[in-house]
Length: 69
Image 1 (cartoon, rainbow, N blue to C red):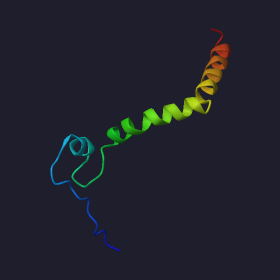
Image 2: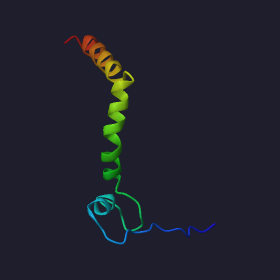
Image 3: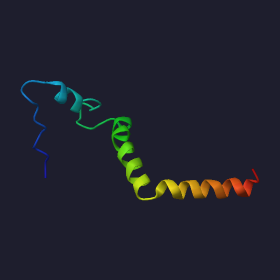
Image 4: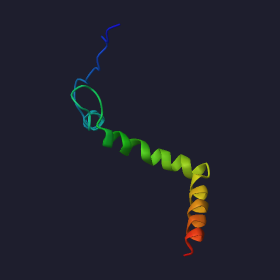
């Protein structure tokens, strides 16, 4: 099936519309670095809330212990 529904542009481009279009390629896809910059802060917050940070610190301390430092 063909993709027929396009992205509608707002009549007057304000700051929000211009910010939403930042990093969007002509084909409608975002640049990978822009997508990563949008996702990483939320991923880090969720990781810290779920205990990911403590797990990483525990693993890092055991690696340091094995290295003898």
